[in-house]
Image 1 (cartoon, rainbow, N blue to C red):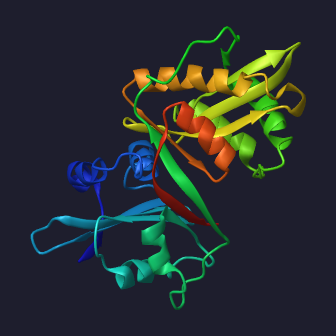
Image 2: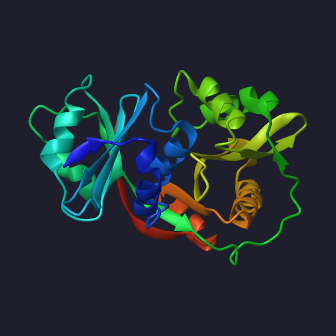
Length: 260
């Protein structure tokens, strides 16, 4: 049986999700930030005959994230998604998302597959002499300007608004380096919750690359987040970037598929 979740389900659902806190980072973070009664957010779960949870699905605006540990009611969850404006955004563990691909009547956005990695220890991190600063809302425009210079990045038209919202809600933070009043490199977290945090937006101006700036910033940010007892997570699809992250202590835990 699939039903919509309410505040009364909170303890049970969080216990279910916390068994894989990295994979469920987005669902956990959105529950903690927005609860069960926001008009832009809904959660459903499938329960077995003993009232144990088998699967969960989050809707955040037009984006959906399903999660399950074994077999689940694909038809039931697909029927829920069909009720919303198509195409929809769908993301999650690749083996779960793939079950919905090609599903009749369900239109999905463009597909992208990445590695999903996590870091639980700071034993691979070292200190640095590079001056690293923590960004405030006053630095938002410089962060967006720097990100817009990176070819691989696709800047959303609401990027500034979203970054401000993340900072104001304490669901993310940014560290950066600067030179003569100009931001030279930065790295951010997003979707931070009580258990985990996602690393995003690692970037350096072209003329300042290969100076160790991004590594210095990541080490500073990683130590702070890990000291709070949180797990660090990130997506990557560039093997060179993957090697850097693994030197810092990240380990692959699976594949993540996004349809956007």
